[in-house]
Length: 453
Image (cartoon, rainbow, N blue to C red):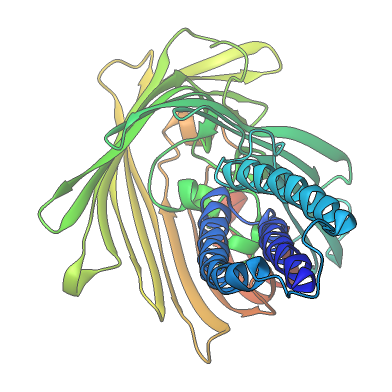
């Protein structure tokens, strides 16, 4: 019967050790998202506790069976000669089991507590490629391999309501020089789903494209952004970035969702033909004010978004530090986005009614827009086509002062092939007709390999 007394505590010790192993095994999930990790730990802990309960019940049954046998002493065995070594062994193992039970309780409590310091995850994008163009180039370069962007972004959060987004981009310009730019630096406070307020440098919320796709090439279907909404240093004629305050939110209306943006920031200026968003203060103390409102459908129209957008600002044009003219810019337009399992369609329209300040009463109307249609085939291939057109009044100082502020039309055809969920191969050709200096027509062919991490 002394053998039975030794085996039962050993069995109980094995049960507790097994439970601890189960708890420690859950640490393999620490790399997952916080919510998912906690849910997995809770499931594993629940299973372990159930197993402990079953084995403990079985252990109790065995102890009940063993007790009568242990008190029955054969007549031939002397009563006054207990097994001292066995008694000491049982006492020692009992103390050890109690210690293990305390550790198990502490581990269980710790497993249910979220981690307090996981650091700040670093994410990024990179792309490389090849380009060929028939466009006249002053330096004679028309073809060759292209080193694209290396883009890093972080999204640290500070408590339940304070969050931030930081995006640092490295890219080579047409002249071959490396440029480093803090594309976005914004800190926000979430009051509710209906209101989050951001401050800093952000993508100006007009249309769909400019806020949906940033400098990481892998996330967008095409290689190039539409010429109309290109970034400022790549010939864009609209303020792709704003330094200021941006309020955004959403609320349920019917089966769908109403979403909005309202922002105020430094007005732009034009320096040597390139739009500059005034990262440090405003050159004319006249703010850029704008907004966007859209409705996101559900049900039979799930995936459809209809919106309207607009902004107003005063823009000065400079040659070096010399002010040439000022323009009051007024834009109003609309956009459509439709995305389901197969289709990705984007339509954006911009109408301008600008005034050359100094010529009171003189207004100039212009318009621009694009349509892009893409369809996913075979699960990983997305052919797409895009049509762009801009009719920009050359009596308007805002467009006349910009190097890219000329009327144009462009047709683009391409295909995106997803190598996996994080990498894509794209092939694209386009034809452009510009009305600059009497007009210029050219063709381009591009290949791009892009990835994210």
